[in-house]
Length: 304
View 1 (tube, one colour):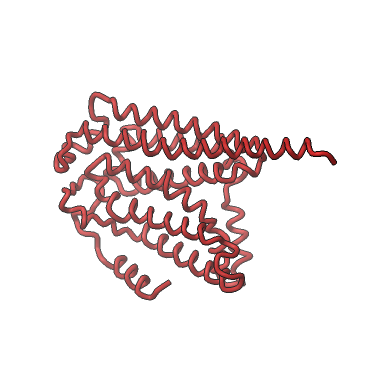
View 2 (tube, rainbow, N blue to C red):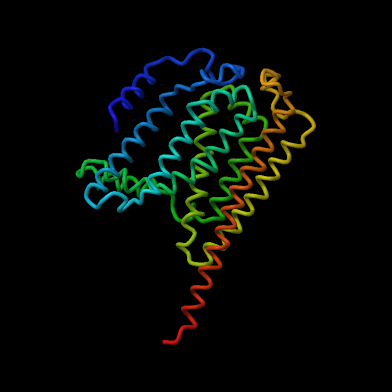
């Protein structure tokens, strides 16, 4: 990692967050978006550490096997894109602006659950990060990862989809959502829940082939279930006749929106872009399922 990157990150950690950037009741007008940074060490330190471990591990792997070997370049690019998405969602600008606009808060949730999570899973981070550790530490670290890694039950498409669905609907109920707006600890728990449930979901989708053709079929079915219930929640927000989250007050007026218009925009963001991504994943799984069935049938009918 370049030295200037490390120094910049350390400097950001030492800067106190300006009062206008506190989460909750703070309002940020359009002209303040360039200053809408969320300087939280609980976010920045893990991001910098993950970037350093992944980059160091890749450098070690590629120096021995050749660039792109072990972890292909496209997977490394996915991980980097996932990190940049996390910066957009959690550092600048959507975390801070999400205290003013419900629609910005919804963009943040979308970035976490349907952009960052699948990109990070595609980046296969465990192998490079393990390689980044001193050789003597690796057995203990590998044992710890095996203990913490979710079991096969939690990564079944049905279970992972239900967990993500409960997180999505539970946190968008008015009481917990508004509590997260005004309490940093609850806000952090909300993001951790969204990210963890989304990683489980996308891991089950992207590793559906481990169970053969049936695995693709099950993952496709549950991904389409996610399209349906996510669309229902988006429609509920879009067509509600009154704002469901009074804690926002009239802060959206700074951006030329009424509270109800802001909520409708948030509902459309959940409904359309998020639904398209899940639908695309479902269609890909259906294609993979049909291809796997075709290959299996071809192998069965081939003469010995």
